[in-house]
Structures are given as C-alpha cells and as structure tokens.
Image (cartoon, rainbow, N blue to C red; front, side, top):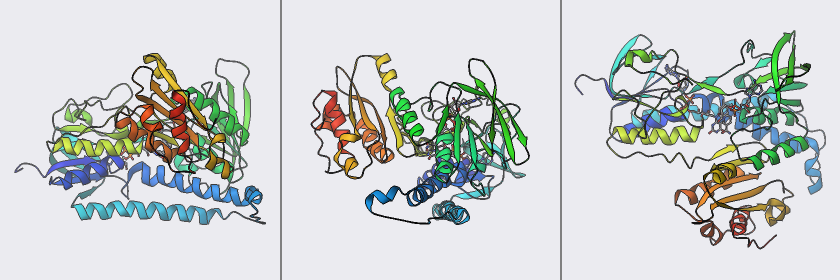
Length: 464
Ligand code: FAD
Ligand code: NAI
C-alpha cells in the first residue's frame, strides 16, 4: 500500500458506486468514492428512481381522491384539490432522507467521500477537483445522463428532460412525451393523473421496446383506456419553443405528411447515454465502445488491470438494481473473492398503474432459442384482484418444453413489481414451472396468479 492512497477508489456514488464502496470497505479495503454531485446516491436517488416513485405514489393518491374512483367503495370525497408544492416537498424529503442515509453509511463504513469531478491522470491515478490520488483499484461507476434529439434544446421550462419533468411547478395542459419507453410512461402517468392531457410519440410501432410483445400490446391497450394518446410509428422532426408553449412537428416514421402538436410542455425521453466523456479515459489507456460504454469481462474488469467498471457506464440494462449487484460483485472480486451477477435474471419493472414487470427471456426470445411451453393466467380470474376490483393484466410463465425449467416470467398487474421477485428467485434457483405450481401460495393474494400461470404451463390451472 505504500505507494497508494487507497486500495479502492470508486468514481461515482450512484447505486453502483456507493454499494461498491461500502462493500469494499466492509471487506477491509481502504476505500474512497469520488462524487461530483452535492449529495450521494447518483441519478437514482437524486433525480431518478426515488423522486419519480414519490410522484407516482402521490399522483395515484390524488387521482383516487379526485376522480371519484373510490366512490364505488362508498368512499365519497368531494372537493379534493391538488397542492403541487406540498407534493414536491414530500418528494424532496424522501430524496433528502435517502441521500443523507448514504452519507451516514459512508461514515459508518469509513468510506471517504472525495467531493468533486474525477478524471484519470494515469492507470492508477485520478484527479479529483485538482487533487491527485493514487489507488490500487479504480472502479468506474459514473452512470448515465439524458440523451436529447439533435436540434432539440432542453430548457427545463417547456422542453424538459426527466429531471425537469420531476420538478414542474404546475400541471401542463398538454404534455407531449417523446419516447414511449419507461421514463415517458412513468412520468407521463404522473402528469396525466394530476390532470394533463398526455400524448406519447413513439418512433417504433409499439411502446416499451425490449419487453415481451404480448405485454407491450396489453399495456398499450390499458394506457389508451386510461386516456393516453399513443402515437406509435411516429417520429418527431422538430420542437420549436413558442413563448410558454411549444410546437412539436411529427410525421409517420416511414415518411408522410407532417403535423404540428401544440404542447404546454414536451418531455424528451428517448434513452440515456453513459457518462464517459470528461473522464480522460485515455490517460488510463482505456477506450469506450461505439455506444460510449466501458466494456468489461465477467468479473467487471476492463482491459486495463486494476481498472473496473459497473452500472449504467457499462453494457446491459440501465437499472439501479443491476448496478447495485454489480457494485457488490466488483468489490468482492477486488478483494479476491468470487463476485458474480447472473445477467440472465435481472428483473425490470415499469411503475405505472398497472405495473409492468418481466424477468428472463421474452416469449419471442425463448421461442427463437428452442421449444417452449407457455402458461398464462388473467387477473380477471384471481380472487384477490377481483375482490379489489383491480383486474387488469395477467401473469405469463414461459418454460422449456423438455426440461420445464422456467425461462421467463412477465406480469401486468398493480403489484407486478413485487410479484416479479418471486419469479426471479425461482429462476435463480433453477426452478421448473412445476416447482412454482406446487409451491403453496397464500389465499387470497395476487401471487396465486403466478401459481396458476405455472399450472397453465401444463394446461391445468384450476380457476379458469
Ligand atoms: P448513476 O446513478 O447515474 O450515478 C453515477 C454518479 O456518478 C452520479 O451521481 C454522477 O454525478 C457521478 N459522476 C459521473 N461522472 C463523474 C466524475 N467524472 N466524477 C465524479 N462523479 C461523477 N432504475 C431502476 O432500477 N428503477 C427505477 O425505478 C428507475 N427509475 C428511474 C427514473 C428516472 C427518471 C431515471 C432518469 C432513471 C431511473 N432508473 C431507474 C435508472 C437508474 O437511475 C440507473 O440505472 C442507476 O442510477 C444507475 O446507477 P449507476 O450507479 O450506474 O449511475
Ligand atoms: P427507453 O429506452 O426506455 O425508451 C426510449 C423510447 O424512445 C424507446 O421506446 C424508443 O423507441 C423511443 N425513441 C427513440 N428515439 C425516438 C424518436 N426520435 N422519436 C420518438 N421516439 C423515440 O429510455 P428512457 O425512457 O429514456 O429511459 C432511460 C433509461 O432509464 C432506461 O434504459 C431505463 O432502463 C431507465 N429507467 C428505468 C426505470 C425503471 O426501472 N422503472 C424508470 C425510468 C428509467
């Protein structure tokens, strides 16, 4: 250690970086974490997962109270009104408590927070806000940032990125969302529930790329029923700010007549790009791939010994829990243990209502790989969902036709995000559909739909 300031220096304190730093320190390594933001927690805690889920929760409460939806249960609320600044205040409290919690965990575990922007000064040296530190191991966990369309400038007043859309001071009359992916649908849901008309413009012919086709179709049906205008197969060719509004020019993706949508706010949600510019990777002898990502091997090691990378800055889904698991694994590998992430079993959840969740292969991917059996069970036949008057969606279990091993599970349901954990655990344990079908599930719960979908793989569900 004589020559080094630290055993491990992590760059970035998002879910990947802060978890890597804490685990490295727990394993007895002298650890520091460089973070340019004023608070720890990265995109996820500051401007991502946490504030978006706070607004999704709050807007759902408002909608339930305001729309009269509770009246069918005899709960009559008259004159429910929206106090948006209180809603933002509660969101800010959640963010502050959680980011402060990471600061506490750093202190508790003796992780040193180096405040400021970090860039490589060599293979084992990094400049952080003018100070050069040397570390035996350096973990790149710099995450990702918003991408915009060429020629469209984000001003976060009228033309917004996700951060702007989490902080709007008033409900826009008409919100045009560019991109029918996760951010577009989650934040579109927030403002729709709070009273905006929401139009989603998606280039592809279906929303939610990458998800199971049947799930994509079912979700689109539900969003339309909720009043979203979904303009799929449509591209945006320009956004022009006009005072406090914007003109969004769209045309069919395959070409055709243009049309102008008048918007009070435009959310650009067409994906994110890794934060690898400005890291001076050349000084470490590293190069990025053509998507700007740092390539890693199975152990999260880069091409340069002693330099590692995890999370959104590397290939794979841009998800907080993927980054966290990689954070633990990379620290364990640095410490000489065996850190592994099973990238075949990473759940993904869209926190709309209903939620949309999946793990493993989509039906299309599974069929391409071999012969499969598929079991499906609708929530319309699940007693708890029926009791709660909450019957949108289904569970689909995809199993290998020969071995019965579960290859993928996809769920549309108000509780999909919670239910998918069971599927991920079953798959991690190499479960068959029969294993799930013969596991006792409590009654009455939404989880019984998972059991019944597994029973349907062999064509023998009870309640349908
Ligand atoms: P990040 O969280 O991006 O953290 C990287 C950190 O590194 C940042 O704080 C940055 O300031 C810092 N940094 C970068 N470069 C430097 C440098 N050179 N020097 C010092 N510091 C640097 N994922 C989910 O799983 N569930 C969700 O519900 C969810 N919701 C989301 C909602 C929104 C609106 C957004 C935008 C994203 C959401 N995500 C969600 C994605 C999730 O936020 C990311 O996948 C996750 O944060 C990635 O973690 P990370 O550690 O790789 O990077
Ligand atoms: P995304 O990749 O989910 O969706 C972007 C959408 O924009 C795609 O459907 C794409 O086809 C469309 N698109 C691209 N260019 C377009 C154009 N020119 N015109 C119209 N549509 C266009 O990206 P998004 O929603 O920005 O989210 C970024 C990342 O953040 C995602 O990778 C996601 O993993 C992560 N995230 C995760 C959440 C979760 O786990 N619940 C919540 C929010 C974000």
